[in-house]
Image 1: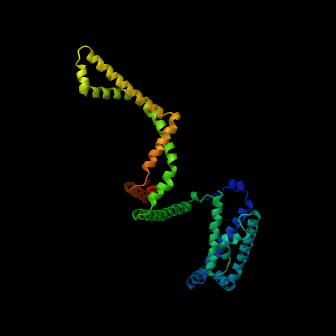
Image 2 (image 1 turned 120 degrees about the horizontal axis):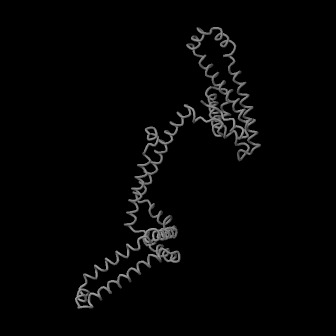
Image 3 (image 1 turned 180 degrees about the vertical axis):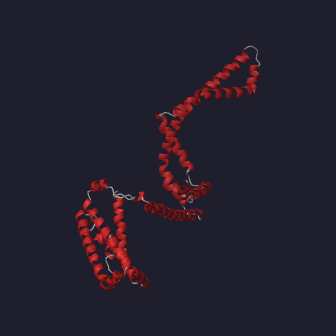
Length: 335
């Protein structure tokens, strides 16, 4: 059930305006119901059916009210025009719009709805929506808690998603066609996006390298040492000169052991020092410059790179289109 939140009404400091809105909503509802009734009264079938139930009312309405319905409608119109003028003055006083004469253009449906002719009268229904929207906007009412509101929200979201999906998919199809037919999209991405940002990319990679050194390499230093020892020992054992040296009595095996240990220490110290140095802030500028040069070379436009980039873009757009085709409203309904 729809319940107004009077607390929000007080907080909005627009109590008088919303009281006027409520009165106008009541008048518009009465006016529209009367218009519908008077329109139906012109039907011989409806009039005969009503005469069978309430003959006195039909005779009185047909003789005294229906012929002068336009006159009665003008009473409502005069009230609507007066309220329109008051709101215009309030909008000017509050500088609601950039120019004083903008109000009637923004609220054109209120003005045209005051024309007491045929279909123009039905534009008064738009004022009902505008008032309800204003009340919803300020939290005075919450249509989302009503069955009618939930129904309209549900199918409004379905409509918006279906339309937006079609628009997005058509746009993506157009982009793919442009890429396939040699549009310089790839070159523009390289020259206007990636290359001007190569310093940013290099700095980002530098930070990541520091994190890798701190979080991945340091805890596995011993594993690297064991790997280097095993690899060098295996390589030395296969070397013919080392095998001949090991065959020397007494001192041969000891010399091979010293050589193995010395080479392992040297290789490990070089690799370990290099990785630790790369992970230090003091060497970030060196790493950043190296990465900047590498990125510059990688991003240099070439035919093969352009083809690979084009395929990458096309495949990526296909994935996006597949995601766009997913009906979220259907998943929510099934869930």
